[in-house]
Image 1 (tube, one colour):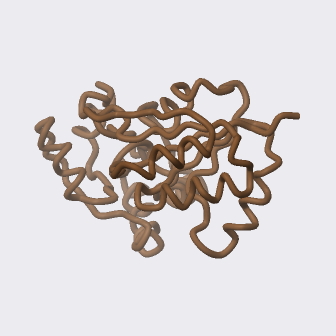
Image 2 (cartoon, helix red, strand yellow):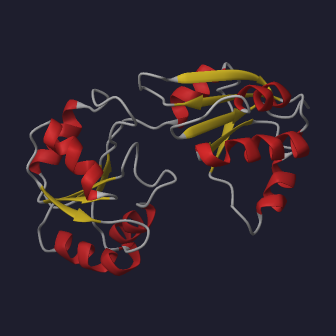
Length: 224
């Protein structure tokens, strides 16, 4: 049956992909990829020869209608991102909405998502949390920082390694340098690291080392 599959891919270690995901990637008519080179390496590793098509934040507005029509015409399509689950701080939600609007079955497979291991490894409250993804880079950033200062639930953010120092400094400014947090990077890779402490301690620690890999910051909620 024609449908859209949302297929999570490994966030680092190539073994972190399900048997079902591999089967779906082999069986679909086409795989929509954020970066065809990155996904191509994954497919080559598992000897998958399914056709790839570029689908990313810069072209999804133009390609969504065409993809919907192809699925309605009988094709089965898989959507992947470079790493993790599509639509979680990655392209995908627009296509999902259009498929649902057109009565197309959407099937999201379970799989890798960076914030889940980072949250659990932080040692903070996992019962009630809020995921913010990437904060706005310019417009609205200060407003958002002021807004989250009073949040009582555990907070999760994604950040670039190039902006980690700036982000930690801003969190310390708006939330207090004694607020507990953790920084996880290179999740599932050889040099995986989770550093826990106050913002003051984290700023001191990361100011002395070069940081690589995507970053997940987990922040303790404000005490009620």
